[in-house]
Length: 352
Image 1: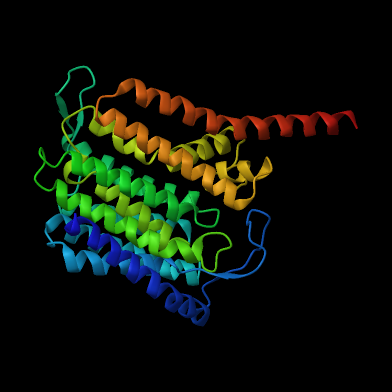
Image 2: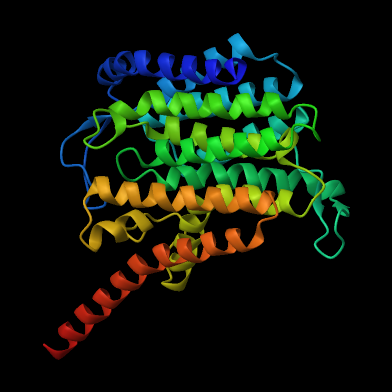
């Protein structure tokens, strides 16, 4: 247990100690989030760049406690590129196309270091797999870039992205630990994910409402990238149908929120990348929840998705299904409430 927990504790300590220093740096370089529109929940300027502390906690703990093999080297290399891009973006906003291009490059680096989706499970034949061949590259890039941005998009309330990433990382660690007898590097992957969780936990005291600092794109893009990479590395990718479903469930909240945002914008004829106030956290606020309660509800939803994945992994299908039904109900309620409120407002305006 010491070999597993100590790296997590060190990551948390480094992140916790370095966050005030990063906060001072953010003020010096002008990495300040100024509320310029009604999408932002905070009213006063708040420094961002906090993700740099999360990255430092992760990096130092990995170097101290893990053997840097080819896969981990690829993750560190790609993650460092993402962090440098995030720092620049937090100081001076980069064009979306530039950020996407850099994310693709970082994803391709993982592929060159052997971290890739080589096959998917055959849902019709248990234990059978379908080799992807040349499709391995675009599918891996799509997964890495997609998850990187889903975590970025969900970072809309104090402590939300850090907390959701912590829950996802701990669940991935459990999956890796359970699969250790089958996969040689399962224990290593478990430590890696717990280091991510520790780095987030060390940052949360400064980031939970009322936030003293934001993680910015530096943090949200880094967390999305590293979680995406870990989820397809080692024990998380296996030759079973569950290997496809489990990571999707664990990262289900940001995946759903992003997918729903894309569908919503397409249906309304707006650009996919156009920001709006239709995210799940915005809807929870609109039905009367304060920031803290909205974040705690989303923590609960993410935890239940993690439990569902754990039940599924242990072949407790009924328990997994119950968790999913309860989770779906928690998600549908704020969506339905805001839709009904919008319809009522529209009808009232039409009568007038």
